[in-house]
Image 1 (cartoon, rainbow, N blue to C red):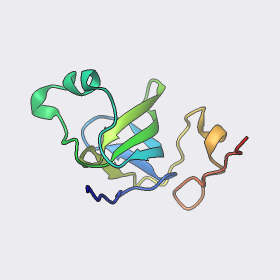
Image 2 (image 1 turned 45 degrees about the vertical axis):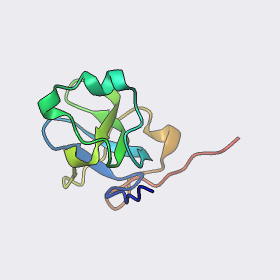
Image 3 (image 1 turned 90 degrees about the horizontal axis):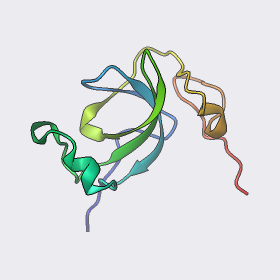
Length: 108
């Protein structure tokens, strides 16, 4: 049985280690859980290991907002203390406090 522990939490602001974007974690997969096509589109020398947590982010860069799927090895904590401006944040989270977002959504 594979046992993993996520380094980052839902609501935490993180940034990509190599690419210029940051985002808020809104879901975590204990290990890779995307398509083989998606994985194989990554250049082989840059492919992350599948046996690690992968994070779903409400991401932003200087030009746009999007959803990103990123391996734990490619994330670092965002130390700016600045909120993220992704327009979907209010659908899942409350107001930015103490460097992170509290999960606040209503179940039907």
